[in-house]
Image (cartoon, rainbow, N blue to C red; front, side):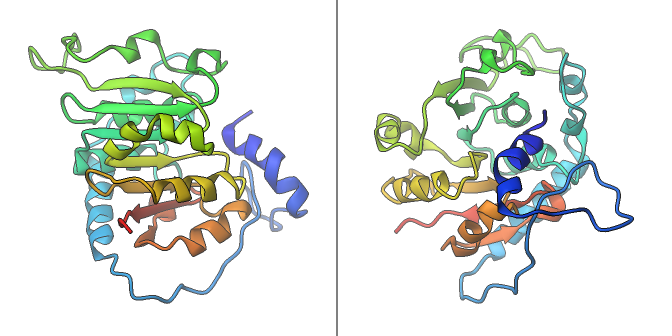
Length: 262
């Protein structure tokens, strides 16, 4: 069962009975709603420039052929637009964050997509409540979690190149004690990809905790699945400069946000 199918089973069914429009072919469908544009005076020009640069990188500078060749790798890793993996890689290439974080590890596709294009010595931290090797369809391997200081043996790497680090932390960042335990790490994050439960609860809690953080550098945040029924209110009311990148990201919704320190 795919992630989208799991979400559909958990969220969409009880909310609304829906059918595909007659004559429309699609592998899956979920309920959403079209709303009028938001009004406000927040300036998102910098996000537009970032989005343009990241989409250009996604189109011309991202190659996942090595990851796609792994056993169990899902075919949608290389689908773009429609999936967000190349866009995440494009954003990482442009932003060059020292620390990138993902909330929601699943099979590991997003973490590896970011890790591949992190700057030398960068760090990707992925959070989940389930250890990566307990996911049946994972494409992650123990070698993906090499520590800093290991020299790359990849054929494309220059001698002495230190690979970006990937690590997984276990815990629910929607719980105050877990967030406090990792506060120092959270405040070091420069790029944050949030692919949590989308239950209209976790995201609100996390937002309140993030407001208490004193980031070293206000992060760029990407929210996944912003057009799911359970995410519409959250995305609509998010009080920061933001940009809907669904047409260049995930078909179920991709939202780009510039965090502003209160």
